[in-house]
Image 1 (cartoon, rainbow, N blue to C red):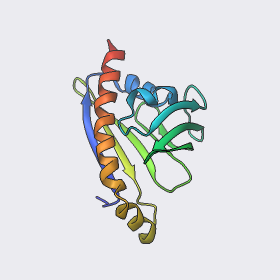
Image 2: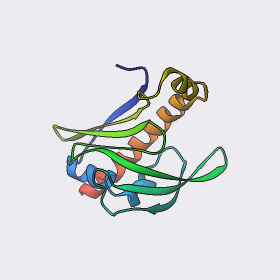
Image 3: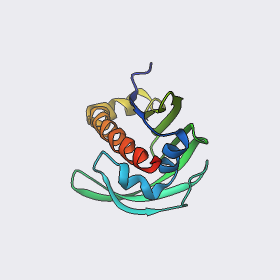
Length: 149
């Protein structure tokens, strides 16, 4: 396992297609964001496809900014990942399990060279992102289970 991957998983009592529908609709991302950085305005398609772009208003360290993401991995109901101008990816992997879906969210910065990776680590992004991932999974679980009923 790469030390440049930050992941957490949870079991959601909903089928993969319900979970994927939330992840593949960028307008639902404020509903599940556990990082506190997503501020609202979403642009892009209602349903993401590989190569699709979407944007959002963000805020970090009190500073507002806009970000544009591109979907770089997509397997319907199983996996979706996007990236912005940086080399890191946000990936969701869905695995059917008895009673629902195992969801694994990963912050993947393995594509950076050692210099850039060290910068990410020094600024504390792996730990900050781990906390955001854990809270996002809590919110995604609640949203998907509500949608499945």
